[in-house]
Length: 126
Image (tube, rainbow, N blue to C red):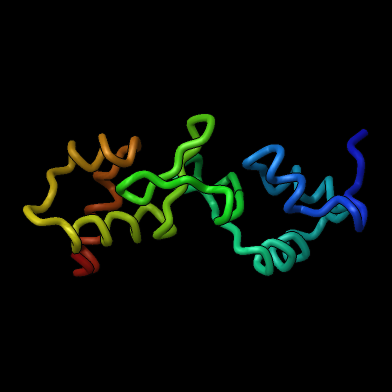
């Protein structure tokens, strides 16, 4: 059975060792069944959630090492300093010199972006 975090063992220590975790891991480590308890603790620490894997993974901003596009990859899980995939697309497109084609964005972000791009266009965001 997993050990519940004590006062001496914080989420920070746990995440520094693991780099990224799921909600279920955090609930288990904190000894709670409530997602909001976990989010309250994470929000005080400055957390990020993955834009790949349906946002299933969490880490801390201070752990991430972003590339020139603002992307951090760890164990094939992708995080963006801009937040969600849509926010990242919006930032990259708005700050590009010549723009991008979808295949270039797929390569940069290492995920399929066409559906998100279509939503951004439909909502007149880009």
